Length: 404
Image (cartoon, rainbow, N blue to C red):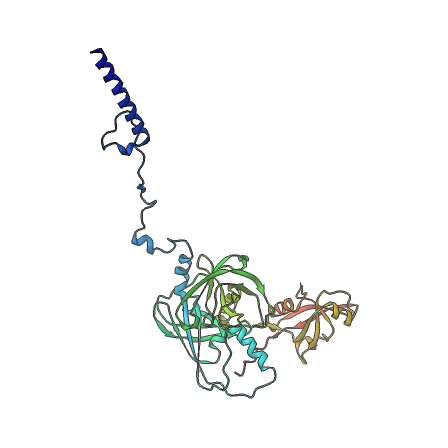
């Protein structure tokens, strides 16, 4: 009896030891429900338990809400309704003889406006561009080159409404124009501050490229204060790599909040499409032009009638100048304000109305800021003599329109 009990005890011990080993190392070998109080706690399953609002899929309302996803949907939602498509019917161009230098002019147009102008095409033309509604009264901004010479201007909103636009005024010196439409409940874009822009800031370009319909592209500010490009008389462009193509002219450049920073006006292109170099007129300039045209029908700028050159080391040597400060007066317009006040070719303009000028761009801006038919003091260097001269400011003539 004792021998049987010993065998039973040994067998039980071996069985329990085996069960312990199997349960520890291979629990899946045991039948379901075989776990006892001595087994390890169950491991977590592979199913994720989502907390409300954490991993749960968004509702349809959340998916459609502007700004619900990363990106610039909120900015586009705010700004896009105020960007319109502009169609300008223009009379046929008169044919003209080919002149020396035409190839250079055509290349310039190609680079900045995206395509060569066809020769010998005397059919009526339709100019396509974009515009931006900036006032609840129906005023909108676009480029002068979009509507110049147009006999009829039509505007289409993003909601499908259309209206004939009245041309309130143009400013060829900045390539801006002001239109007005009469429609109720117009969407109006918010104006931003271009002065606070920095290189690298994110921007959106909104317009109607190639007449395919309203399009939004994104990029960054590539440079600020671009000038001497030969596009406009007064240049202070915002450069961006946001895709701008023919048809975007007059459209909006906006920030990440959907506020207007500039009016897209030109591209540098060898193919007719975007190459990542686009230019926009700052909203500060556009605001000044808008207010002047709405108030007076035109933009009045000061003018003194001089031709200028930047002072280079070669100019310093040729004219025996003391230093490189100021702007060289290379010519004066007969009977103009400068000539009438005694300013001569060879003089160096140092200051206008108390503001120092060190290059032709600064001089042009300083004179343009003067009010016509007022008197202003200028400082010039003539040889070793410094002169303070008072002159009567004239009104800057409007540029002559291109015969094409």
